[in-house]
Image (cartoon, rainbow over all chains, first blue to last red; front, side, top):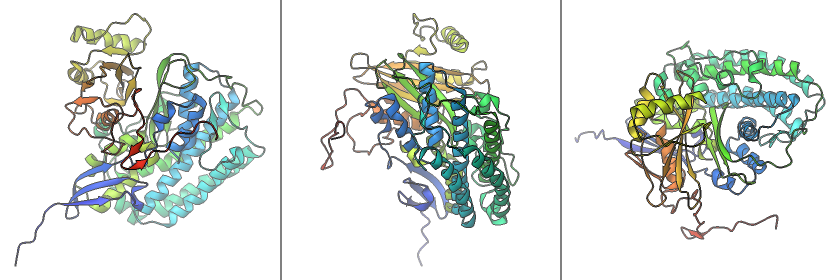
Length: 373
Length: 165
C-alpha cells in the first residue's frame, strides 16, 4: 500500500459560478478542505469606463456610472454629479436635494435587500431570497413610475434630476415604508435568528478592525468590524446633516465582532435607518419646485481636480475628476469600495474551509461591475 | 486647507528638500519628490499628529505629452478625521516610483491598477501584474499617446463610429 498523498491542490472557482456574484475567478490553493491561499483574478467585466470618459462630455458620463454598479445605480451617479457640481459650484434647488436623498436611500434599501437575499442563497436559504425580492420589486416599481427605468436610471443629472416626482409618489412611498418596516421583522424571524444560518455565518471570516482599515475596507463591511464610520454622518454631503439617524455597528451578538453575521446584521439595521431618512425627507420636502431650474447650459468645470467621496451601499465611493477647462474631462477615476473589499479576501479567508469562503465572499457584498469598471 | 500646511511643515522639518514648494497659496495638495517616498509613507502613517491609516485612492494621471505622468495619493485618517492628497511626478520614458504596498495593504491592488493603465513601475511591489486587462495586452491604455490596436490575438478591433451613423 502506498502512502496517501496529501499535497496541496489548486482549485479554480469561476469565472462562471453562481456563488461568485458575477464573473469573478478565484484561484484557491487547498489542503483538503482548508484554504491556504486564495488569489482573486478580476477583469472579466472590464468595460473601459475610465478610457471612455476621456471622450465623453461630463453629462454623458452619468449613464456609464450607472452601469458600473448596476445594483445601486442611483448612489453611483449621485457621487459623480455631486463631484462635478462641487467643481462648478452649482447651487441645487431644495426640492432636488430631497428627491436625490429619497432616491439614494431607496436604492440603498434595494441594494441591501439583494445583498441579504443572495447571502441567504449562499448559505442555502432559498425562501428569504424570494421574500426580499418581493420588496425590492416594489422599490423598483417606485423608480419606474418616476423615471421609466428599473435598473439603470440615468436619473441624477448635473444640476438636477431628470424627472420630477410623479403624482402619487409620496403617498405610495408612505404606504410602502409602513409595510416594509414590519417586513424587516419577518426577515429576522426567517433568516437572522435561524439556527442554521447563525451556525454558518457567526464566527466565520472575522475581519479585525485594524486589518479592515489597512486594506481600505469601507461601508457596512467596516462597520461590521465595529468601526463607527459613515460618510453621511462624519463628512455629510448633500443634505444628510439635516436628518436624524443612527449608524449601526457590529457588536458580535452571535459570535465575535467582525464576523459574517455582523456584516449581515449591519445591512439589515441600515435598512431601518434608511426608512427613517426617507420618512423625514418626505415630510420636509418642498411640495413645489422646478427640478430643471439649476441645470447648467454648459457643463464645463474650471481647471483643477477634485476627490469626492460619498457613502454608497458598498462603502466609500470616491471620484477623482480632473478638468482642464474643456468640455470633456481629462481624467475620471472611480475608487470603488467593492474593489478594496475584495482585495482583503485572501487575507481574511486563509485558514477557513472552502464552503466558508463562499459565505465570506457573499458577506462582503461585491458587485463585479464596480470592481472591473 | 490647514491640515495640508501642517503636514507640509512637518515633512519639511523631518525630510528637508523633499516637498516641492509651489507659488499658489491655497493649494489643497502636497507635491513631493519620489526618492524618499517609502520612508515618508511610513512616517505619515505612524506619526502621532498625522496618522494617515487609510489609503483611499491612488490615481495615475497623464498630464499631456510634454508634462509627463503623475501619481496622486488620497489618504485619510480614521483616528484624527483629516485627509490629504500627495502628488508625485514621474517621467514618461522610464516611469518608476517606490511602492507603498507594504505600508498600506490596500495600496496593493490600487498600485497594480495604476501599473496596468499607465505602465508606472512600483519598485518593491511584491506582485506587480496587470489588474484589469488581460496579461498579454500590449501598451498602457490611459496614456495620452496610446493608440488602439487594430488586431488583438487575431481578432479585429471594431472601429469607433462617430455620431449615429
